[in-house]
Length: 463
Image (tube, rainbow, N blue to C red):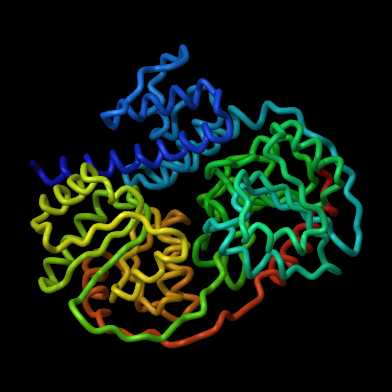
């Protein structure tokens, strides 16, 4: 089988599996939703799984394919939003076209909705609302643990609108410092918007973007006079009712990839980890714990080049799906097409949250994928003392690892091109990272950003 065919088969299957995961989660929230049932059935059929189901519902559109095309107009905001997220994994979709696809989603689904009008007033303590389904054991929740609970109550009064279906011990850690905690999973977007409006929120913060479980169509109704997007997505929402995206100078050096204003947090969108210093002996091992959908065609080609350059090394991949024999076969075939034998690969399924961190003790160098760079995976690798080599592109989500490395004084792990990536990764085997501590309290930066943007909003004529 030609190399391109083998790798494309893997990447397509991985993206369809990512879409299937979203469909399954949708059915947990809305068990009788005919669109989610049809989407799931289409994906099972496309994956050709033994338990594939027949079509349900009367939709004629092939949602399995539509959910992988960010330009798809199937008349369902949720499916189209999922397509925007899934397109971030696709190196074949141009950056400008991806921004325009987000803008088109906003025009179709957000712009037609009626909006609340506001007469904001200045007050010493801003009322800030956070909207999320991820405040628990989830990458967004884990990254926010050092931030949201540390807000200064004299600066902001925290309201949380939690759409989380399964609360856990991390959820409780967010609940304690919140002035008001509202469970919102039983509210539709219009009802949620009305609840937020009635609460008198000054600054409303979206923590999801186009990731699953988002409530962007509540934001489309402008329930608060100032609305921001932060952390959960890192890319544009495509919505005119989101006033600004909170990013940083490394992920978003320009505003070219956003339709919103970009406000840059000096110390970064993702909190910096405390670096650990450690050493490791044994067979050289490169590794990645990123989602399988991030193994794009150019990623597999480049990682294969690295394994050829370092013939004694192995590649350890640990992620959801690799405990399934058919998917492991696709991975093995994809690397074999580039001359890498199965004996060079160590393929493992996902481990429970927390226990997966022990895998980093077996890895010398973590390999960052592209065009969708690691976020929480990079954070955890660096915290475990593992160097991470990255090849950033132009789109913000390809620059998450770049941001973490530059802020950690590890800019020499940022590659200029493919040749540089191979060289850096090969030379980083045995490298010991310096120990460090987190540099800032992100809550203070957020409070300053909210205040600055709020003062600007007070001076505008927009209602």
